Length: 512
Image 1: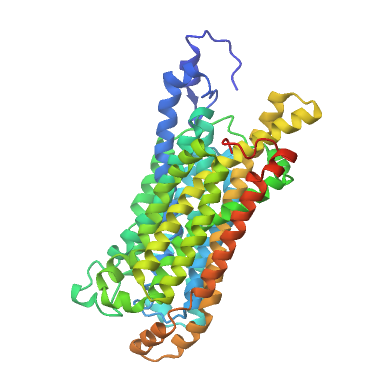
Image 2: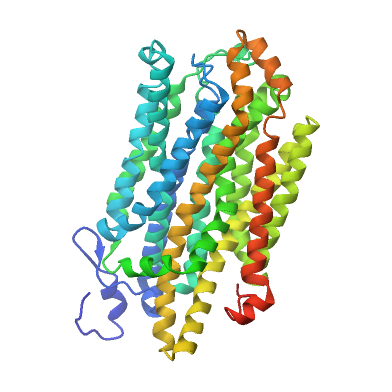
């Protein structure tokens, strides 16, 4: 960092300068004069380009949710459990990559890493465009096909790590008073990529296919287009990042903060709760198109427009959940994050019960409506849980300073760094919860998978699927039980007055 003495009038301009490679050597967004003079403009530019790149990351991450339900149209014969495996793999890989991606920004700089991480998205799109639809793959044995498809699907997980690096990078650009809004916009803008993919790709892959064939149970698709359509945007995101984004010299992650946070029980409590919010959002975003296809085949057969063009309306949930995230943060500022989170889990449990009823009654409107409510609640929970983390660790810092006679300001700063680390840890574990949702659905689908796979004609497959349309009910009961547990945890740790008084003061206050 520069140590040159500056006059107050010159300080903002000097801090806005950068050296070779667009590194900002003296970035202080908490200095109001600097922020108003040049910092806000630079931060906004980086936020916009970050949202664009992160949006593409989410788009590629969930790309196989649409590819999988069209593999039969492309000539592949897979059981339902095999299809769930293919959508689980990118979820698993993306969740795992979130941790190393968090440390990439301090290592490479936000500008360089945004360009690199965006460029890596060319790998899954190229594999999908040039390998999956190839005649060579269709001629291989079923085992070989599965290995190749699994590799291609897993590569889409590269898009899942972008969230962590993007959030870490943007957090350094904004002052504390604006961090919440900036990170909320960054997160919501990225989450919207899920809805964009699930709305756009079903339309893209039928370009050039005769309209008259769209109503058929099996019809031609151009799966290559599902990969090709993203390549120009990926290249543009990488170029814009490299040309216009900045890196902050002082954007360093303190490894000791992660070590300390891992020793805090609250880190693991909040990570588990994030499974119930973000894990639900991303898990259902991955699973819902496939669940709808195999739970309400008669509805989709009677509504080919929805089945073909809108992928069973699965994109609507991702759209609702993305837009609801800032709402959850806003409500938490006014009602308390813990109270909002408790209401979210109780609501998710209730609407999961409604979804079970919808399956039992073979009512697509009831089932679909209940899941849209779950997406709304999950999106709000994403915002409320992230709002809770800094409040909880600020309270822990005050408590430790009071008990041990430590310097209050320094102790709170230390816990503030721990809270930032927890946000990264919880993000990774929460995303892993989405993978667990795929695993539970896959286990529930094993029976219907075997029966459908044994059928010889599309008509027989449809008849068997209709007869076993309630296959998802055991999985839904598991999710309902989990939401009840999460609600109990939220009450026990953050709203139970005896705990708040004896263990951590003020946890039950509106600030949490």
